[in-house]
Image (tube, rainbow, N blue to C red; front, side, top):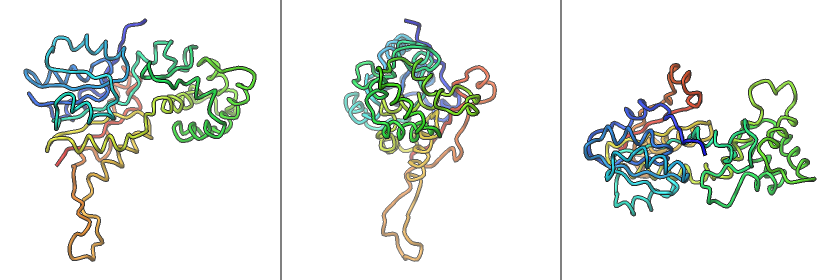
Length: 311
């Protein structure tokens, strides 16, 4: 197995956005290799505490190694950040001072061929963040109906040729089970019109869509973002890194709802809806990586960072 490597995206922007200070309790919902977590612990010394979650056992092992110098100041739970209420209760945390969510797929997950995340390597169709989960990409590709596949590719991958690709997948699997990333990538390419095959790898959107389905990445996302934001201490910050428009749209809409004050008809003499503004949006337009970072780390090119503060 290759060494886990994960260069944290927009590191300085995230640290500044969290408004870090010594002490306090901070939550990293997607610890990855521990890059962001390391800086949080370093900049909240000597007594800042970190609670973190991740579903990937390899990521957690790498993070534990990287954070070892801060022994006693952090706990990592193998759990989904969406289960934050359960994690907070187990950790004895009520209201964190800050929350960081990084929804990116790590370089390790993409480069470790056995994980089946990448269309660049031929590997078993897997794509599970949590190796113990039941649903694999192979199950989706071979078990879902043509209509279900087309919907996933359209909704999660924003793939304009979703119906063509879904039809091609169903036709190809009639004779045998599709079991490798290389075969799936070939099927995708064959079902996209030739004149549209020159704008980068054809399979990117399909692989993104299937990965989202396998890991349930968008299920409960809005509720989790809303719940975590509401759990913040007054003045606490939440920073969220997204890597495709679906996630970013969800985060934007949740922030907008939480930042809205009374929604009553202006003709009413008094408010009857009772809605109160809960956050101040710090980034009305999402922050993006600098040109220098994009040159050093291609993963950062599609990253968007949104920040909000509890009021």
